[in-house]
Image (cartoon, rainbow, N blue to C red; front, side, top):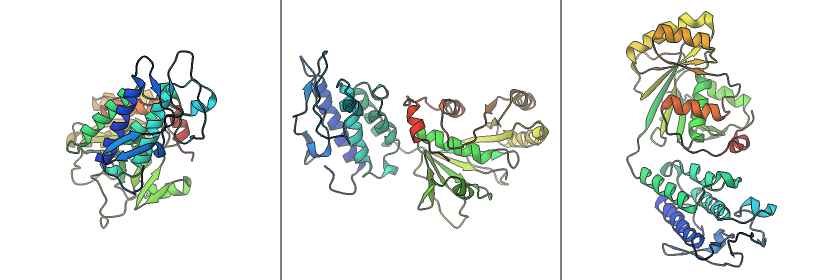
Length: 353
């Protein structure tokens, strides 16, 4: 099916939607729906811009009594439950669709196809209960993503400040980027301070990879501070998170969202209040987070600043993702709560330090 290194986003959507149409037709056949069960590149024929399936030797009608599935070694693209003796269902074909889309996505410039992995990972989830319920629902999300990608790209800039050194600004910014990427958004971290914390993390997390200056680890993507002489790409991400550390810039910061990190230490509370009050005058829409915060500290901040304070718990691993972090980020940034896969997915994909 794929004999070239690059395919366009238009080709990706065209082939993916055609495959969805084919399987929608098969799954709606009367009196009995037909399950194909053997989707793989070798069985897909491309005739100019049209997709055709061949080899229905494994296909079977869906019945209440169950289905007999003959194994022919197609483990790469077939649903894992088929190899455990489970009954074949339309979800098995949805899994194969997801695997084919993952294969095609590897040959597409991901900057022109943002958020596609949210769809492909869900379709090809190892747990059938986490997949799309029908091919129609998969097709609907593909069409919605295609429509969104054809609109002018809207980039959101988020600036993160710290009240003082050691209050956890970088820690929080990394968690924020990791959570956003897991949620299906496209987010990148930019180090705007002189601490060189991102480089130092490479000594702790040996799995951090670097390509063209971009560091990646699990769902995290970020650029260290390379200085003013290096021009970094900003236009390929939905959200750009700028980590200013505790060095407040002299010039006003242009950002859509500004976040101030305060430490929960009571002996630093007045330092935090002083910085917060100063920033409030310049940035009325400032969000204040009490990092590692106890309720007492958050209440003191709220009382003196006359605003809501977000409490962020302690995370020993900034790359860790769990249900609370996703809910926290959704609430903080007023983001759409997208339907996420079960967190068994997270436990397999969140790297170990």
